[in-house]
Every structure is written in C-alpha cells, then in structure tokens.
Length: 103
Image (tube, rainbow, N blue to C red; front, top):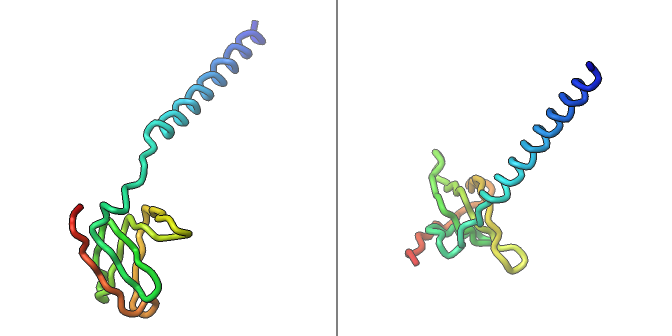
C-alpha cells in the first residue's frame, strides 16, 4: 500500500512541476514584446564614430549624457538594447545631442 501511495505522490508532483514549467514557458512566449521602432526614438546621440538613437535621455552630474533604451547600427541594421549607456567625457569626448522631431 505504501509503495502505491509513494508512486502516486511522485506522479502528482512530477505532473505539477511539468505543468508549472509549461505555464512559465507559455507566459514568456505570449508576453514577448517586439522592440520599439527606431523611427520612434526622440533622441539621437552623435559621437565621433557613430550615432545612437535613444528613447530616454538623462544627464549625469558631470554634464555628460546617459541614454536608456537605445538602438545601435550594426551590420546594416539597427539593434535595440534595453539597457543604460553612459557617455563619459573622458571616453567619448564631445557628443552632440539631437532632439528628433516626432514622426
């Protein structure tokens, strides 16, 4: 009798774990969002070597910009990064901040 109860318990626990894994996989699949379009970026940061487009801009205490949610041109297409990128003056030198018109 104990052997049957143990097997039933293991089957129930394994089924519950499998169910939770499937639910988490499905939630990640369904709620995956496409990155925003680069044409919607309100800010452009121009360095000596490239241009970054950003959805948010803030200024650091030393007066250099910091962007969050930005696009970078790589191999002919833009890639979106949902992270923060500071532009310290000692590394980037002078950068131009351009406010892009709304599309």
